[in-house]
Length: 143
Image (cartoon, rainbow, N blue to C red; front, side):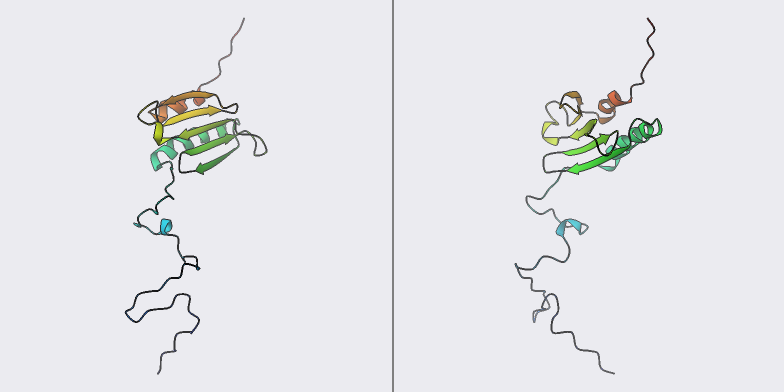
């Protein structure tokens, strides 16, 4: 029983020593950022929230959704900062943005809550304390 010959038109030609030859004109089959344990590609590092930060943010978000105040969110990762945007409706502007900017970690704190107008409501080093400003309960004031 003979094994079938490999197709002539393979994606990447195999060199005689067993290495795979890649061409600059072809896109890679798998992005280096998607391979576990692969070193980051220079210039493509992005800031992101870690698991514990996302847990804190999503706990707050879940409570506000249950109360009917918030309905949608978006997450953006850029080389400068990570942003969790909160919306009342998907068709509106973001009510608040929770931002992580590592460049400011030693100065004012990496975390901030920004209003729709761009006003920084709170900034600090501890995410839980920073997002606590969004979790304040409204109190009835009688006059």
